[in-house]
Image (cartoon, rainbow, N blue to C red; front, top):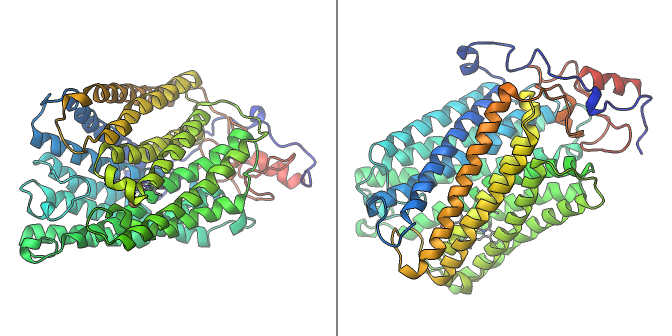
Length: 559
Ligand code: HEM
Ligand SMILES: [Cu+2]
């Protein structure tokens, strides 16, 4: 028990309800949004834009799956199919997965969790949103005017000679990279300089630790991608011989440069998911995290080791046996750091009083998919196995388990958990559970067949296949359809709740995360008065309370 204040902390029931003067209505008009420097409004705009692109990418995915419904041609030509899966990958990775959690929840909650009024560079923050819009616009131009057929990996030399519109797509991704770098820079400086008194490094919410680790990767790896994409564009436009052997270039150089970014990039996608989960798990169990330091430092460990594993994408590209062995072993280290987190999250649940909310259901989905996807990653990093699975549907299933399975579950957990704080409204809990079950079921039905298909030898990126692969492809397409319905359902009830949802109290889940101390939705300046932090985040011992709203502050001062 901590030194308990004279009064008891506010219970969810007596916490103040809907905050009438909040960041959403403090200023009105489209101009006030377009020129805002409020990190919360920027987060909301990222929410709207990334969700839009999520559905665009999802539409491409459904078209790909419908084409694969029958062994021969179904609804499109081979060339259209190549464009479809490329656009699906490009949109999902560059316009959704990479910006989503940092852009939405990092922007919205990182400053609030640190007791800061905004990020360190609010104008740069707005710039990162505009860079995102410009990058998306350029890529979209390429997609509408013919699209491209290289796959999201833009492998040379094909990408330097294809007749499709690869250059605008490359330039779009190049600009998007700057958006990512600027966001990362802002978060790092914010964590270093704007922590409120009382929030030491070892009291920083775990969400911030993991976003911090992500930001390091964003800053160090993204420039390499930028250079690589620019080199492909220059080679395509002006015929320089950088990667194309016919012009004296080296295609393996491209693979090294591409994966030097793109393997760490998978951690740009999964570390923010881990950030969310570390918050959600404490609130679900009503317990503080088991092993705070281990969870915090394993994020940095993943960020660090992630820079030394890219060679596992080149096992079959003529790599020497020694190199392959070294990259294989280094890849396993990522598994160790991930396992540290998984064990600590699970231990946090032990003896917790768990309420089975929709966001807890997504946590369960996350844990299953991360462990399953991670184990198949370890298997792929074993050279002898990878030689069999490389470029098959097994790889497709592996990375979807991590990216869709783990990261999208965490994104959905975050949306449900923080929705009341962001909008001051509750979503309908029962529909939330229906949505979660649909998603988890649909996901398994889509991707488990793909593991089997890959293992039986079905290659990725082909639009037709032998008849013996038919049944499993039908199963996968049915699963994807179910998944599509699940996402539509979630979209509908969230939009519904904005107008008709029950008004949320400041802290409907009784969470002790720092961000729950302020009002719902938060005022433009985040807090009324200077917030005080007498205890670590998620301290569920009697009487510990963080302030930020007048009600809680009263309690703290009474101590
Ligand atoms: C934790 C998040 C992870 C994400 C987001 C992720 C994502 C991906 C992606 C996108 C690909 C396919 C790239 C492509 O060719 O298009 C891939 C392949 C691969 N992943 Fe992962 N992965 C993760 C974890 C792991 C882990 C933990 C390992 C090993 C310890 C691993 C090992 C591999 C290997 C060896 C391949 C290449 C397989 C091949 O092309 O033959 N991955 N991963
Ligand atoms: Cu990798």
